Structures are given as C-alpha cells and as structure tokens.
Amino acid sequence: MLSHEKLDVYRRSIEFLACALKTAEKLPRGEAPLADQLRRAAMSIPLNIAEGSGRTQASADRMRFLSKMS
Image (tube, one colour):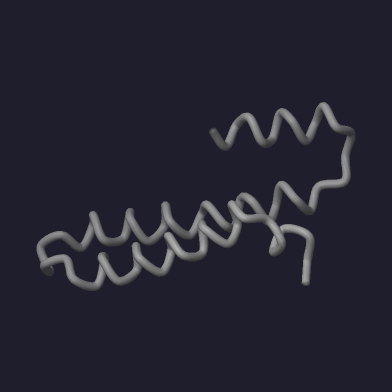
C-alpha cells in the first residue's frame, strides 16, 4: 500500500469520486458539460493527494503544494 492510500482524506476522496460518477450518470443529456466538470473535479482530488504525497522535496515546498489545493 502506498503512503497516500493510508490517508483517511484519500480514502474519502475515492468515496466522493464514486458518488460523483454515479451522480454524473444520472444527469440529463442536456447537462453533459456539468457532468464532465463534475467528473474531472472529483477525479482531481485523489490525484492531487497522491501527487502531493509523492513529493520528496523540502517541507516548505510540500506545504506550498498542499496550500494550493485548498
């Protein structure tokens, strides 16, 4: 198991992604841009967490990265 996979926030982001994907499926066809945006936004959360956890730079650089996510 990778270090980010142990984080509660990462596991919750995966749960949120699953809910977002189900919700996007249920949106009417006319809302395709909204569904696409929802999918991309929900996917970016766990990807950003994984990327930030994989950084091995100095603590100050990591803090800058994490602060940009919020």
